[in-house]
Amino acid sequence: MNELIVKYQKAADIHKEVRRYLNVNNIVKPGIKLIDLCNIIELKINELCKNEVDMINKQPKAKQIKGGIAFPTGLSINHIAAHYTPEFNTTEILGDNDVIKIDFGVHIDGCIIDSAFTYSANPIFKPLLDATREATYNAMTKCGVDARLGEIGKIVQEVIESYELNINNNIYPIKPIYNLGGHNILQYKLHGGKIVPLFYEEHNKEKMKSDEIYAIETFATTGTGYAQHSNYCSIYAKSGKKAPLNFKESKTILNDINRNYASLPFCTRDLNILSSNYGLAELTKKQLITPYPALVDSLNSYTSQLEHTIYISDKKTSFLSLANDY
Ligand code: MN
Ligand code: MN
Image (tube, rainbow, N blue to C red):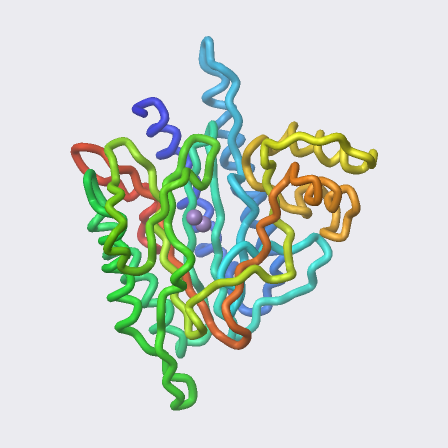
């Protein structure tokens, strides 16, 4: 792990640098087009990663590693909690009363930093944003060797359910999105198989171990507390399954995926196609790729998220993506 942890730290530095760039230039504000925000973030990630990777690869006897965007940038607004990334022809603009979750990933040699924050120009949403902020920070401080995942969920649930949101004198209780959660991260594998729940799972005795990487993420909502798949889908990842293909278009897309993304998630924008593409449809139907549709709570609800990537070791827990901004 020692060799990899250096790469996680480099990826974390780049994540923080991208956030600093957004802040210094006051980029996240009402009026920005989602597609522009997405491009700004992803170009910056690629630029910074290229410098880092070039330096590593130039060293004597270096095995040539890759680095860059770890997954399509999530720009999920209001009742959309996660997995929304714009298509290249999207005209959507961030509004004054929108609550946006900005979730982006950086990787160096498959060592992924997955970290997200929530922004709204309207201060009435502060309690909703505070709920996930406090929940994630409290959860992070309880992480460490032998920490029970089910107990971390308890802290998250208690914190989030203690908040409520007042909109025009209507009181909305705030709850966690119970069917979402944090996760461990493996090299080139964003979701490593362990889940950190957002509610008390008394019978979940699974524990954190030394030398594990976790994305600690919490979601809060004024809606039902359950995220469902929407009809909108622009994010996919290779499944590992094989099957004969009928269309030339499908083969072209698959070659592109193999060359550029391997096991990492990608989006239609990356492939320069729309989700209506029939090659993409064939790959999905034959299960060579898995679709990750946008996850939504009830219409007119609002959701927030805060996410950090951390490293568990015998000595201490390192909050890799933590900086002054969040
Ligand atoms: Mn994330
Ligand atoms: Mn995550």
